[in-house]
Amino acid sequence: MIAAFVILLLAIAFIIVATTRFRMHPFMALLFAAYGVGMLAGMPLADITPTILSKFGSTLGSIGIIIIAGTIIGVMLEKSGATLVISKAILEKVSAKRPNLALSLIGFLVSIPVFCDAAFVILSSLNKTLSTRTKTSVVSLSIALATGLFAPHVLVPPTPGPIAAAANLEIDNLFLVIFVGLLVAVPVVCVGYLFSLFLAKKYPYSESAIEMTKVLEKPVDVQPKLTTALLPIFIPILLMALGTFSNILFDSKGDFWFKNILIFLGNPTTALLIGMLFSLRLLPFTDEKKSNTYIAEGLKNAAMILMITGAGGALGGMIAYMPMGMYLENLQLTSLGLLLPFLIAAVLKTAQGSSTVSIITTSAIVFEMLPALGLDSESGKILTVMAVGCGAMTVSHANDSYFWVVSQLSGLHINTAYKTLTIASLLQGIVGILTVLALSLFV
Image 1 (tube, rainbow, N blue to C red):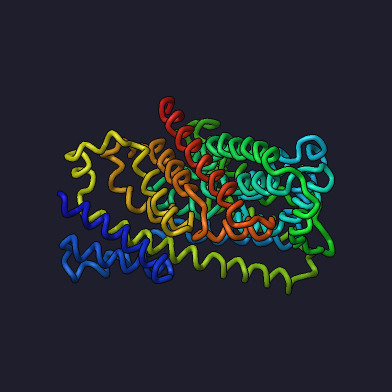
Image 2 (image 1 turned 30 degrees about the vertical axis):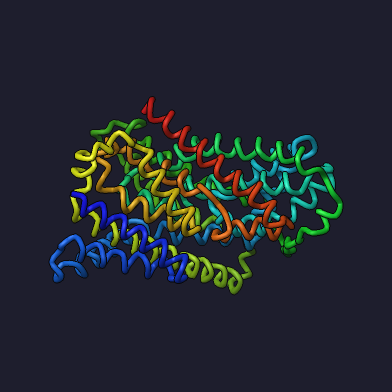
């Protein structure tokens, strides 16, 4: 029993050391860890590689196209200028009196399909515009935007991390993951917004600070209309919602043709592929070369996520060989419940920096523990995804690429970044897990 936990701890330690000390790519670290766990756990050598290949393939088979479609949607929103169109529409409504709130809302919406790093690069110029217009601290506005972007990135599909976690935990209903993710993200974004208001008093407006910011807004020849920009985000969510409620809308025992259409369209893969088609409309139909270039970029971005996700699934297959649930019960650790995946994700995030790697690795590790933790129901699995996502926010510091994106584009000294962004991510993680624990009382 103790040996199994030692093996698990060694695997986690290896992943952390390999990715931080030796700068090994997470794909390689996860794959080598999978082999190591299999060998140390006593799995027959002849079975190790077939098991790894099987879990690697089954993981990608369940979510591969979903991740590709979601990534392409994000790239098209970014390159077409749709992200800026959405942002400016929100700014027109709330920026005059509440610039921090405006940026938090922008981050909340934009980061659902777009990686938070890329989204901050695109939107960072808004900080300067708003700061000058409203005489508000750039530090404050940067944290409002950064925290608004961070929450959906770790909690709401189609961001790859939550999608991969849902696949690793074998969750069938992706719409419910989106719905619960949005619920959890609201208080998480709110605490980032409130913290940014506190920072506005601590770091007053300064013209010199404005000059330090970098304006990276690239002009787009023809920007899409607001409704066109929003369709790739909301159409997939609407379709998945209709698919989820199809059995409620129609007789569950019947074979009504319209119900079958809704189930087909509401399948996450189908829904996101349709969303991807709508994203292609963001560029002029005549610009086929540019469109194909952006699709290729989306495929390239998705490839890395797919490989890491597959390797995480392979590691999960090796861990499944050990009866971790029985060991948890014997050690009386089952009372930790949702706190266990949160803590594992927080340790991995803080140690190696990547939220996505933390989410994928943790979800693979805890899958076999779910029955012992009382989380093997559909709702329990969804709450586990949320707990893992909250852990993967805690904390952002110097080994996190997002830390440097935010600090450099906002002109923040590293000490200031530690006092603002790092503390903000810690507060968000804590509020997030408290929200998840509160939800678990009613679900």
